[in-house]
Length: 324
Image (cartoon, rainbow, N blue to C red; front, side, top):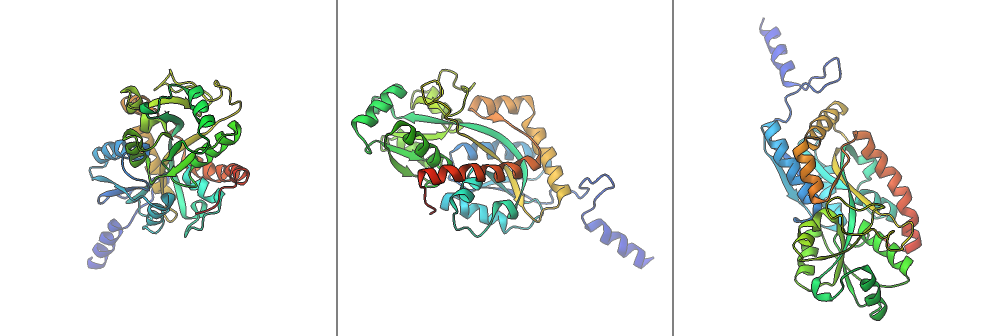
């Protein structure tokens, strides 16, 4: 009887997989950490905190957001790659994972092998903005200023050198035959502060990170990079409308886990997070900020990283962007 009791107790302590493949262990068993590999205040940070609040209530354990900026997201990402695959350390990642692969950055990990996608939560337009004091009221005025001051107009890159914003700006400058003075930042928060403070002239940033400042008049919105206008700022034209034919840049953000995370736990995480994202109140909140809901399968994340890395590599070569 003692041996039988011991075995029974031991079995209860182990993760269980039901016949249907569901994760039957009580998850989470402690606080969950969401690593955001950029500085606080940007769109990734906003998304992470919305998810953390809702998942904390659902899981009955605190979900803590930790900003770990640096090296174009590599420092925070590496922390997740090296974490146990038990679902208690997650990454709020996105297009930078593919961009780093395309550039050939010398990283201690390969996102295609060392991370597993949980959910591609949202896709985002990038928004070109200017500080009001610059005197630029629209995209035509921006182009005129670049012509008058070639290479002098400063432009913040919230994702740093080698980010999606960097690729997008180089693509746009090449199409216009003009130059900007690009200034790298470790995230949307500090980049926005410098534009608001008048230290930087312009910025290309995820729309959701700038929506409130545009609505309040603190930033002047010039154009979005997607083929259609954003519901959050419907008055802002697309670059295609403004004559930059075929120009499209769209970023994404979602959750990922260490590669060792069991597939059954990935499936549960996907169900839980998608359930939050598709709640009408949360969807409305995200769309009002400027996000476009995706909320797809876990496999979609892995596929997006692989396909984007291939597509971005062509842009990197054309713009001659070097790894950092």
